[in-house]
Image (tube, rainbow, N blue to C red; front, side):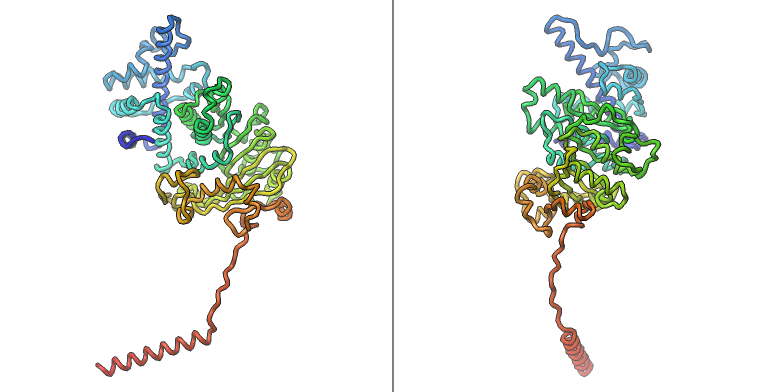
Length: 511
């Protein structure tokens, strides 16, 4: 967790950007991302130089060569450690006229992150602001993965608090719940086809670091973690840069973050490629058949983006692969032929594991739509015996536009340091979701449908036309209330009226 001093520095730089006329929080983070990338390149070159000096061998990787760039400036002046010592006017000139063209032209070993820098634009308006940002980033210990990762997370949270572009950010505690529910393993190949800032991929990496430290003692697993495990698509170039940097700062060196319109392009190279999908894709409405990938239309013929994304998940998963994805409630009970067919496929052709209904305020203030987490395993041969349902009433934050914390930080999220009391559970259901999920094939089978979670046999779901809304199966207990006879109530009212009239007569006599 970042310190109060560092947080206040970030806040002051953020305010300086706004005062300088950059009002879009995405643009702020984008500019900081470029500078972080430049510092990272300088660190790589410094490490290579030390290795070359120690072993007396030529450098294996040269980022800043000898000589001058095409604009006549020595490449060494483009290094972070050099230009941060320049006077403000010279620093501004070097960064604007030399560093950013260098970013656009370079391709460090063809890395995905370098590719995303091809469209880099320098928009910091004044030398004073540039100096302030460079000073801030120079104070951050970049060799500390936790610090630089938390710094970037804090800045990404500001996208949401600024009230713009919040659609790119799924609440962190919901992401962590979905990661805990699926438990990524060292051999998984993970994909988010609507990656945004890379939150699901980063959280999966943090889970593996915590629960599977053996990854970094095994050369093959370590290489898979850095080069083959994490994949994300997006068709917003800004998101690609931010998501790629987010992964790098969290210690994932070679994450595959690439440009792709997930619903418009065919997926021949990615079919059956992934063992785990975690996603909260945008649901924008409808697409034209002409602009939709034909291989998705073969799975489910529809224009609805929410159904096309579900078809995409089934396409990308390898047999035995699992998914935890967020869908709008309409997917669970929609009455069109495409809605029903997709749900039938999940239940009959694959293994539908669970439906977790989320409160409608989870994504406020950006959207009040009701959503659910759908958990399933691709089998191509069925396997659904029963479906586990959980009705989440509270996620630890208020469900209004303010989304204020209802509990101390240590009692939020799916993993808490100690068990929650009944009162605390009423404010945060997520630890209970996780605990009951792992009992879905055991004691959960015996729970009544009047409880917060329960299981429904496949036969009942089929008989209901594959309706997957929890309200279709939840039973409500109506309490019997004994009302007094009307005659008795009327008699009591008349007695009270007589008493009042008598009191008034007595008061009048006294006056």
